[in-house]
Image (tube, rainbow, N blue to C red; front, side, top):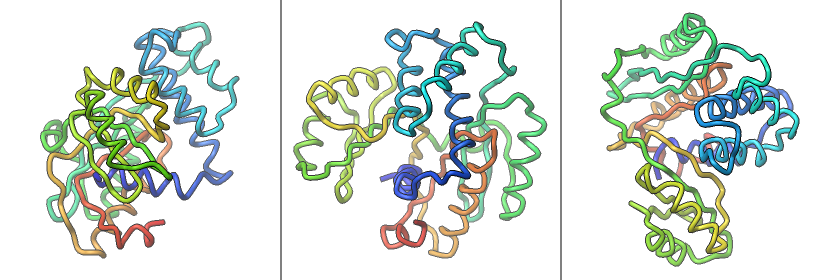
Length: 248
């Protein structure tokens, strides 16, 4: 399982505190708004919007908030001049980070990110200096529960998955971008419960660090994701199972 996906699992287990719920809703609203702006406000015809709305539903975001975000995206309501961008950062020991942001002020966003990475002896990089280490994939996470992980993996492969990884009771399904929607819909038709479905930047190779360095890296990731303008952070480090409890 990739470092980022393990981090996503940890965050789901942590849950969302009341103090952070407002920030989460703001980030989800921006994701919905951007999806509606790029592909229209009809989720049946806009797969990205449908994914964003599903994330909002699982986070218990109020429906009124979702609808307002869609209307801002389609221009029915006035909204901020938002833009999506990716920034690249070099961490210690050859590690790399891809930082996805949605912002109305790039100068503010860059200054905030630079402050965090410098505090962790890291620095922002030039465009292309880190991104070559990552590939954009559709990633579908299935929590098996009482189901058979091997059977779930075979069903995913039959549905057109590019790769499947099993760890404990979690099955991670990787797809090419053009197959992402079809594979997800096929899994739903087979009554397979999907915990998450997102387009992610998947590292081509994972780096294994010392325990202390891994913990430091994930603290930096968490601090970056706590910034208002940062949507997600992808990194190329492996998180050993024995560290999962310490990160939780």
